[in-house]
Length: 396
Image (cartoon, rainbow, N blue to C red):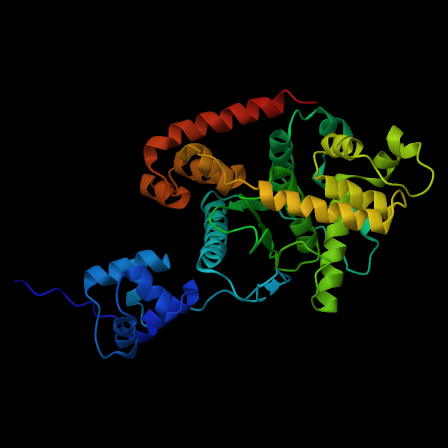
């Protein structure tokens, strides 16, 4: 019987690939279907994996095979500031799925920058900034003006799916890449962002509800205005470092005020008629939430900040909403490859890739690689983008 071909790979590259993917030895061995002693022997240089085993490891670690033949491990990205404090979660520790999403976001940003250069175009640059010492209501007002979504537009959206597409498109038009992570559980991460310009990045969790993702996008945009890379759970009430708590509360306040502006909310008949704090009926809170296409908790928090309800009522309803959300949360339904690409990669990035292909700056193989799909789906993507452009053109 022919002997399997050994892969000539350096042990430190095997260690780097495993640890940077977020696996310990036992987890990697289980994924591979091998004993942990085998993994340890490879990483100590006592034995070598076969080429077939190395290919399987590359698949598990989500790395191209060629990376294992580099002279030394590449430098990893600088860690983002971790604002999370989830129950049972250790800040600063990312699952393999989250690490893949972070690498994918950075990879797409580098592709986008290269494509702009190849097309001899300059990417739009977000120059607006904010300081943590500012009034969050003022920052929210500037953010809303910057995004350019009018109250009239907001009232015309027919459902939350149209709302999230509109907010996302408006943010991307600022020169921000907005992606959606598809393999990370919401209990680990709701959003993260890279603030470097040009082309800062926002990533929201596609497993979260549309209204909560809208809030996440604006929360992460606030981090970008602060020029701060971040990974967040958006909970500003659980225990954490005081400085982290202040920043998360600041970004939450900006997002809430941008989505539900103070002036508009106070003009709502039910709010304008209110005299002093009170307890709100569920149907009234739901109605206000639909008006702005936000969660009931966002509306309730705005009412609290404006003195239109009590802290006790807010805390009771917030606990109810969180319990309800956890029990009702569903996995995303099936999406065709073309729809999934636009949903996860975003129109800005997809259009840029297709433009590069149309102008002979990249190959068909590049398109398949950058969009992570087979070429036969490209015509459907182009049709979908054309329909979206037509729909935007008919709006006021």
